[in-house]
Image (cartoon, rainbow, N blue to C red; front, top):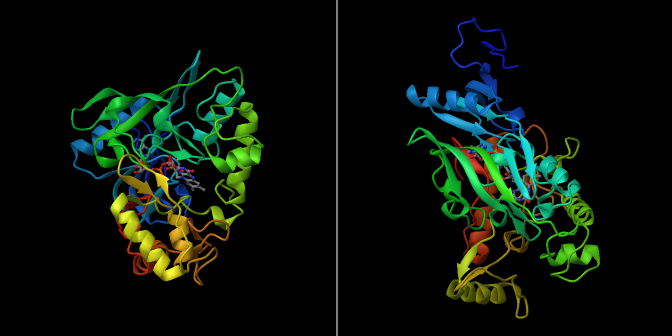
Amino acid sequence: MAVRMGSKGEPAPSRTLVPVQELHDAPLAPLTTFRLGGPADRLITATTDAEVIAAVREADDSGTPLLLIGGGSNLVIGDKGFAGTALVVATEGFSLDGTRLELAAGEVWTDAVARVVEAGLGGIECLAGIPGSAGATPIQNVGAYGQEVASTVTEVVAYDRVARETVTLPNADCAFSYRHSRFKADPGRYVVLRVRFALEDADGMSAPVRYAETARTLGVGVGERVPLAAAREAVLKLRAGKGMVLDPEDHDTWSAGSFFTNPILTDEAFAAFRARVEARLGAGVVPPAYPAGDGYTKTSAAWLIDRAGFTKGYGTGPARISTKHTLALTNRGGATTEDLLALAREVVAGVRDAFGITLVNEPVTVGVSL
Ligand SMILES: Cc1cc2nc3c(=O)[nH]c(=O)nc-3n(C[C@H](O)[C@H](O)[C@H](O)COP(=O)(O)OP(=O)(O)OC[C@H]3O[C@@H](n4cnc5c(N)ncnc54)[C@H](O)[C@@H]3O)c2cc1C
């Protein structure tokens, strides 16, 4: 049942405008996987689409800044917190009709993947273990191990804060690209309510395995199919070894996963970068290169960070690079957001000095920037 709470958790007066759980001066750190960030003036938890929309409208009508929170696994919130309303989208809904899946925004993504695999359907099995909510998956077009949601999302149902109505955006209107989308490009506009997917029924088999490391782990060639459960388990095992599955006991997972996106360079810029690598690290050292569309090459942020001298476990303070993965910046306990940002800035400057490439952060920053 929806409850409204007053200041510091005290029950609020009965004349509620928005019938949802509400707290004031509420700490946001516990709502993030970094466990970082100061308080929000007001924190609302909404459990139905109607509650979400009412809370968004109320904030918009009063000109109050709004921060949407799902699982808090891609958020870097400043130590001063958020001067406005933080809205936790905690709606529930899992509906499978043949190969058509609809998830409410607040559904826990990795649990939904497990249910889909259990139902014998493919297309998202390699996205197992990604923390956070279903509603946030279209925001940065989550991806891992050769899959991304852009390949299976058919429609996103969202509340449009400009048109002040609920809209249904087909995949083609979502402008999905690598760790990006229309929603990330225009963060103040859409509140995702539901995400619809088209899955594949291949008699209990996975989609063709696209990622070499997964294929090796499964003992198959790239492009082959394996039983769905085997694909999911292989991914979870690989992820756990890199600290990419949440574990409250393991500080390597007090992170936002990859802190930087893999740089995409024009082919000319890549050639210049390659020459710089050879000059610095010696002939024969070849940086990772993946095709990224006509005229573009993607390289590896983890490789850049490592080769610039920031190896696993780097750092002496409470914010350090994960001991399991160079790309994850972590809170070892007791860090502040400023500690984390100081480390991130050091890494960015070091990689720029070494290779002339400026890394871009993947998580969304709130009230702070790199
Ligand atoms: C250990 C670990 C591993 C990870 N591995 C991966 C990975 O393999 N691949 C990958 O792509 N990501 C990965 N991530 C990042 C993160 O899990 C994903 O980006 C995830 O989709 C974020 O979901 P969330 O609900 O936690 O979003 P939040 O962190 O709560 O929010 C992220 C952004 O989305 C917005 N948002 C949240 N909900 C909504 C909504 N309903 N409508 C509109 N906007 C909304 C927020 O305002 C914010 O801007 C990882 C993170 C961690 C901690």
